[in-house]
Structure formats: structure tokens, C-alpha cells
Length: 442
Ligand SMILES: Cc1cc2nc3c(=O)[nH]c(=O)nc-3n(C[C@H](O)[C@H](O)[C@H](O)COP(=O)(O)O)c2cc1C
Image 1 (spheres, rainbow, N blue to C red):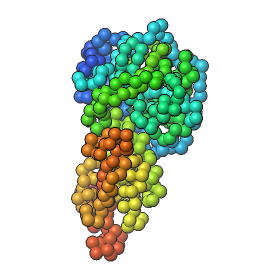
Image 2: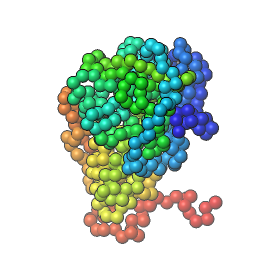
Image 3: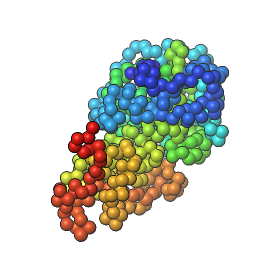
Image 4: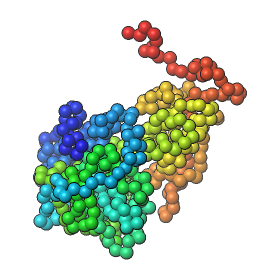
């Protein structure tokens, strides 16, 4: 399903918010997206620009579930399945993304949002960067892009990631295509980080058929049905990039980033520009969701894992709840350590039993309150590699961020405080009694 079909489906489901006020991409639109957090949003009129703008396409798990045709709790399994079934998409001869080729490139004609007064400038935030590594093949990733002038942008390439690695080992410029206005499967796939040999478009194609077209001026392919394609080169020349609001809700600093030069711009007739609110729910969800299958897979190596949630309040990045079915007294502790292996940026994790609704923070807190003892069930790890996005960690320039980590085993304790194993009947005393579960309930 391409972006437009998703908008139709969201409209039918009553999820789509449309805004027909004439709004300015400079500061005004970001405030509206923020106010309607999570709901897919279509701006029908943009002051000074021809294109319409969409935002918050992946702003809530419900939007993703609607697009992919599954229940929210099944998203993790659908993604894990797509990782396993990734297959290269076909390349077709023509696609809607090349309906119009602009005679002269002028990026200032795109309604690129400036989100906050303290931002470095207008930023493309939902642009997917496609490059080809001679060793590993295609790489697709989100890279925020600061608008410099009619043909130039500055990219934020996190050190050690695919695009950065390619640029560092290349003697000169690197060909690039930036696609904007993408389907949910393409957005989700681009947010994954499974290793240099994994082609993100193959993951998208496993979720939904995603045919590609060849670019006009560079040796790259892009989804045929996206809205805009910017073709050009990532250069070895740098310029300051930032400040920019990151997913922890704090301002990221100014660094030097490579300048991207755009030489060809194609788009659909009546193209829709896609925006993504920095630090917003969509940013957090896209970052975190692809990490849940990775945690699930590691925890499944040590016990029976039922589900995983990276919680929204901690940026869908730093905190997880892991649900397991215990078959051994130590399964909770084993799951804690495995969860940290599955997502190295994870800082705090709570492990719960299958009777706890992991989507309800109140239930998770109840499990901690009634099943957890700090002297027995707490694991603290010091001086661990951590997330560069956590301002409370130890950051030393040129070195991996260091942090402390904490795991809480909030599963039903199978041992008494004196170490005796509780019988299954004794463990039932930890179950929550609910009026709605009683026989004869109307
Ligand atoms: C909404 C969003 C914004 C992101 N912005 C950036 C960014 O500006 N720079 C960056 O290097 N990675 C960014 N990422 C992470 C990359 O998309 C991707 O996960 C990572 O680069 C994958 O690593 P790889 O290129 O090694 O496969 C962002 C991810 C999401 C979901």
C-alpha cells in the first residue's frame, strides 16, 4: 500500500486529520503536528508552496497496524517475519515518482519545515537516503538533512552507520538518492539496522510488494510509488549541522556533516511532501519498533519470550518491558541480560509474566509493586556501552558513550525469601484478582 492508499484507508477508518487552513512550514506546521500527536495528518494548503504535506504517518502503533492489516500486538512478529523473508523487489521500467522532472533544481520550492526557533534551519526529516556500497550493496536509512540553498543540504550521518562507513572509505563523492513520501513498509524498513549486508527495500518488499525504478542520473533504485526523488552526491566537504531536537526531547548539538549536492529532482503529479516531527511520537516509534524483534530474538534464546515493548515515555528507545512465560526460577534474570544484548542502547528493562498487559504502564508498575524485591530481583550493570542520546550518560568525544543499566525482574518469584521453591499453587497467590474474571460476570 503506498502513501496515498494509506491516507484513503486512514480516512475511511476515521483516523486521518485534515487541515485546510493555510499554514506556514516555518514553525507553524510543527506546532499543529505536535498538538495532534500520533494522528495521520494532511495539510491541504501550505502558504507559499504548491504541494500538500502529510505528517505522523507512523505516529502510532494503530496506524502501522491499520496499514499492515494486523493487531497492534502482532506488529513485532510481522516485522520479525519480514526480516526472515526479505527478498529483493523487482525493478520496473517507469513509476509515478518520475512523472515530472524539474527543469531546474530548487529545493527551496519544497515545503521543508522549520520545527523550532532554535533549529539550524529548515530540515528534511522523512527523507530516506539510498546509497550503494560496492562491498555490501544497497543501504537505505533515515538521515536528517538541513537545507542550505537551492541545491545543497547537510546530512547527519551517525558515525559507524552504513552511509557514514561508505563515505569514509570512498575516495570521492558518493552517489545518493533521497526519497520522500514513502509507504509505511518502506519507512519501517528504512528504520532498521540489521547489518551492512541487509537491503532495507527487501524487508519492505517482504511486508508489501514494493517495486523499484532506476534513478535518472545516478546508479540507484528507489520505490516507484514514492512522492519525490532527489538525486545527487554526498560530498567530502562538510558544513555545520544542527541544532536539532532529538528523540529524547533534548537538543542535539552542532557538528560538521557532509554537504549533499542535488542535481536532479523528480516527483509525482501533484506530489505530497512528507514531514516527520523531530522528537515526536513518530520519530520515537520508528526508531524503537525495529529493535523490539531484536530483543525478542535474544530473549527467546534463554527462555520463552511472549512479547516486547519499548515504552513511549522513554523515547521508545531506552526502556523496555519484556513479557515471558517462565519455566525455570531464573528465567526472569536471564531475560534481563538477554534484553540488553538485543538492544545495546537499552538502559532500563522490566521483565513481567504473561498475565501483565505490557501496553498498560499501570499494570507493569503493579507487577513491580507486588512481585519484585530490590535485594533479590534487581540487576545493576556499571560502565556499559550506552545510548549517545541520553544526556545523563558519560560522553567522551571520540569514545563510545558509557552508562549504567538496571534490570527489574518483576515476574512471580518462584522461590520464597528463604530460598524454598514455591509450588504452582503457592504461586497463584501472586495473581491479580479481578471482578471481571469472576464466574457469572454479566
Ligand atoms: C525517524 C528517524 C530519524 C533518523 N535520523 C537519523 C539521522 O539523522 N542520522 C543517522 O545517521 N541515522 C538516523 N536514523 C537511524 C537510521 O535510519 C538507521 O536506523 C541507521 O542509520 C541504520 O544504520 P545502517 O545505515 O548502518 O543500516 C534515524 C532513524 C529514524 C527512524
